[in-house]
Length: 194
Image (cartoon, rainbow, N blue to C red; front, side):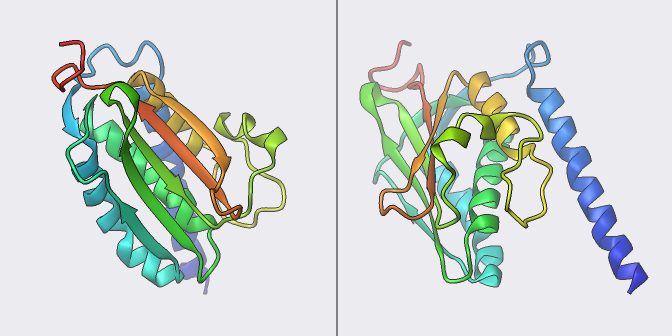
């Protein structure tokens, strides 16, 4: 029993250290070496979503994907984009109740920009808390899920790094939340600036 508790504690500590390092790498001043390249947001998001299917099944959560049906090019740094998506999907799966659903969607927004949305059936985040969830170490009262309060702060920093904006709204069906990240168009896409 003690060994199992030690394993859980070490796992939590390792995740916290990884998140702190990720946050430091994404802060202003630490990003001069970032090399953005054209990435198909549709294909990338589908790949990441597929990696989460086994955990979603284990949690009893229906994880779905809705694509734009065509390539959606954005300029991104793939490792950081992966981290942004992993944090959003992790939160959605973690906070959705058994039998709930999580939907990852990619759409082409105005001016050929790409939008990534993750909708969940978790507890709705109150309007007055929505701006604070992106602050470091902020956690909602009444949630009993393990976490450090760094995941959404990391998402926010990575979004800024990409010139993207992030919003949090009530899910379209009135149950849960939808986090949307809107990326500027790739300079190499039609309608882009390149």
